[in-house]
Every structure is written in C-alpha cells, then in structure tokens.
Length: 171
Image (cartoon, rainbow, N blue to C red; front, side, top):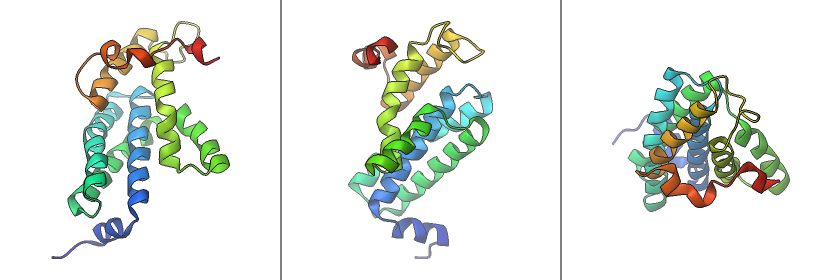
C-alpha cells in the first residue's frame, strides 16, 4: 500500500488533533453559512463541508486509524476553508481564542462550545440586532436550513426549541 505525504501526515497526527481540527472546520463551515458575507458559492462549499464533517468526526471516534476517515476530515476541512476564504469567520471563532488562551481549551472544542449560543442568537435576531443587510427573515431562514444539515431532519422548532431562547436570556 502506498500513501501520499498528506495521508501519512494525517495518520501520524494524534487523534485529538484530528478530532478538534474536524470541529474547527465544521465550525468554519457553519459560520460561513450564516455570515453576512455569505454568497451562493460559499453556501455550496459550506453545505458540502457540513455534509461530510459530522459523520467523519463520528467515524474518527470509532476508527481513529482509518485512512478514509482522515481523508474525509481533510476534504471537509478543504471545503470549510474555501467557505471562510469568501466569508471570513464570525463571533464564535473570535471569542473562542480567549477560551483557548485563558482556559487551555483546544481551539476546535472552544469554538464548538460557543456555536449553540450563536445559533440561538442568530435565530432570534430582530430589526435592532440584525447586522445582515438581507434582513432578519433571511438570517432566520439560514438557521432553519442549517440545523437539519447538521443534526438531521426536522425543523428548528422541533429539534432545538429548548435552546432557542431569546437573546435577553443570556444577559
């Protein structure tokens, strides 16, 4: 069996590095999908990454030495990178660095921990809090499209209602 340099490097990476890198990439794709600068092109890249990465991360847990799993994480990461190349990251990434630096939480874990708060915030934007020129309804629709992509079928209300608290809940 012959592997390219990238595959060899990916297989030599410790499990935790690949695991948290997968979450970092998934977070990049999610953020790029809802970003103010998102475009049809960035959405296509994000959707591909979001289709690949959750199952790849899960499969990594069950088979950490699998070449095909590591390649799927790399491919999903590539599409996530293409997404943020267009959109840039958003608040979860910006805030995650403090958790990484101050609390020594791996970056991918830190950003993944913050995502649910921003899914909630973005779902509940109103005219006063919406920064997207496409408007509140467009932001809400992005979240409604995003949640089933990440966790399967079902509406936001059915799947995540307990978590969709008004932003004032966090003040």
